[in-house]
Length: 302
Image 1 (spheres, rainbow, N blue to C red):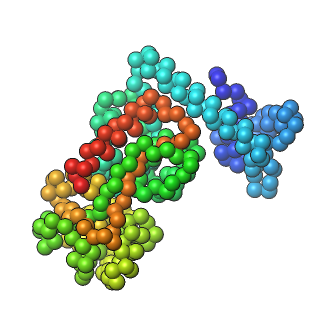
Image 2 (image 1 turned 180 degrees about the vertical axis):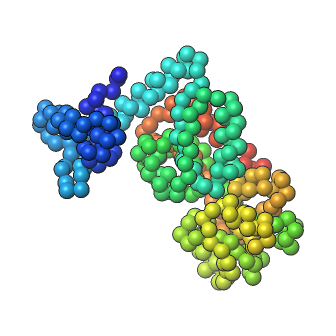
Image 3 (image 1 turned 45 degrees about the horizontal axis):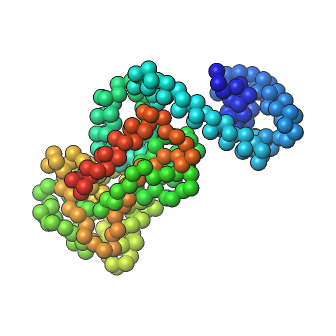
């Protein structure tokens, strides 16, 4: 075992904020964890943690040690993955975080093809808001992040990026469906089904509504892209989405996506990110490459 018990204990306490919670996760006695950390602190002559009423907080020395431990974890994982590749195996674990709206279309297609080619893949996928994706990928708790308009962060590197113009999503028999392009003013009076205030598309739209002095007729708010599309199919109203959110829906003829050719609506940027200071394992890098290639094909559905 390349990683010592001491490093495991220090890492666990830093992640869980207390000796007790770390010991529960590791399934060992809290006294064993505390004793080894105290012995190490005495040996180096400085504490790794501030003992505060609410738990354990890393000191500056502790941050140095934990940073080293996690870098070493990444190198060990990379070595293990490369050894598996040398043995001809295509197994490994990939942790992917993505915006919920991308799951049933874009992510599903890429992952389905990738899993078929790599049947031993252990893929863990979760949906989270953009801020959480940035934080968890930057901290090394996820390998890849995929979302719209991810904020810039020094802990992240962009692996692929593509601008996605927004468009009005309507039922195929809606009067706006045959139009080659629309402006926001064309949607005046329409029943709008939009995400809640403060979310990505909604921020762009609220700014555009204010700039154009349009009073939107918002009848339903939901952060579920699937629900918004389902309500459009049922004729409840119309919504606004990027083209990538409509993969399959337009080709199957169940929805129409009419581009918004409006200077007040800039569109969104879809990004695939990874940890800047980390190194992707071979299988993680292969999945990232699969997403890069899929990005190249997004122009065909815009």
